[in-house]
Image (cartoon, rainbow, N blue to C red):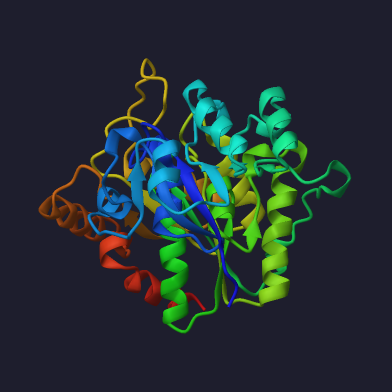
Length: 354
């Protein structure tokens, strides 16, 4: 049995919120690192699982890295747990990163801003003999792939998990659906498209928004093709990014559709969300209707939305069930909240497509 390296996640003022989606994802699932703590003074002293989903997971939240090292196990890595607009490092994170490096703890970042190129951090890392890993980078230029229209020749179903907004739960639904397919006897693989999925330990994928425009579709298509050739699955799930209708995040969804040539689409919704998730408060962009999003996706992809998955944020249990019932009666396709209800109806729908 392989022992996972231990990590603590830096998520000051962000845990349990959309900006902290990397930390949230790692607390929910981590196949690569053993998560032993979260740093966020706004909810320190609590269990991270309890804060996130009301179920303790034995992962303590600390007010600072100093307290985490004093009270908890020593980690091998400090992981940056936020996904900021533009991928910039928050200035308030610098002291914790500096302390980790000075203490001999490596740092892993999924931000666009490369910490290994920061003069202060790189000097400390070199002096202390520790590593800074920036994972949100494209492959070497000469190894990049152009679009080659590979998906159309695959026997495996290709099902992207797309969404009506950013930070709406697409990746989480992808992991849950992949596990549900396996339990249902369907061989599947999940191809991720962002830094959090890679940190969680996905076998296939890339940080799509770090790849140059000429190669975005080709690189994702290459990862889908690798998963198909090496694993020979019946179903390939692909993590969505942003939303086809979100003005700030349009390229990801279009590239994912083009690279995967979907056999069907799962659409993630958030019934209580009135405005787009975007960090600039002055840009309050109303959410589209589910009908509008489905029309855009089906028109562009020449495929069908086969199921709806629901983010329960801001909903009571009664409101959640009413939303799900409403979707099923309006669209005549499976609808569910994956975290609490599972995805068995979607698994059965996919089995019908095989």
